[in-house]
Length: 261
Image 1: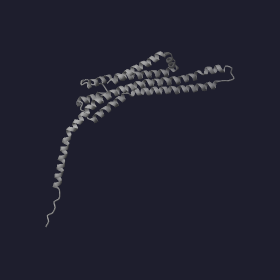
Image 2: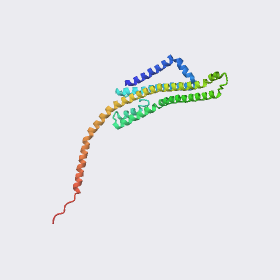
Image 3: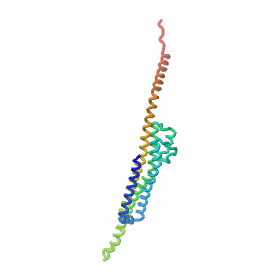
Image 4: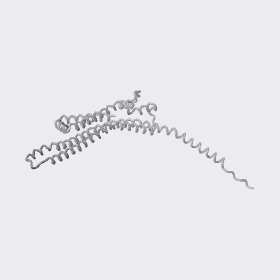
């Protein structure tokens, strides 16, 4: 159960480390951000959204964690967990821990699917950041190629001020290159940050699943063993009774031999 707290601490330390880097290198960060304030602003906003979503989902696991900890200690709290473990809590409430192996496997698979679906928004945010980084790259390349094309088309080498014209015309291609590189940098950096937090979220969810599965598996195996041992003598007696009935039926229907003259 300590794994859940370790993952939460890793998220907090990693986020604080990224924030410290942004504060220390704020001038460089500001220069990168204003290269294309609109696209880069969207990327930064999406990164912040992903960070907030990851922490919200981790803190949403706290009630599940508390219920599971109390249940493993033997405290049967009538208040059920809110979302992910609610189905198995209802099942255990009616079955009193007596689960067959197939039923336990099905319930655990259902919880795993719920947790995978719960992380879909985070994974979509990571993919969106990668897409925005690639979008900025191609957008910057288009501006760069277009700027060089306009510059070459408007150059007049017979003019004495051709160098000044070239210098003034380089602003658009250089701005396109700045857009391409900065958006790629922010997009990949944002996807790395949110991806790391998403990994810790997944590990925190898996820690709850594994703890619950280990707790219930021990009791499920004992229940199935006792059931098999108690039912085995009855099954043997029933098979013996069926064999005796079959032998009696065969003796009744055996053909009799004709008497000799």
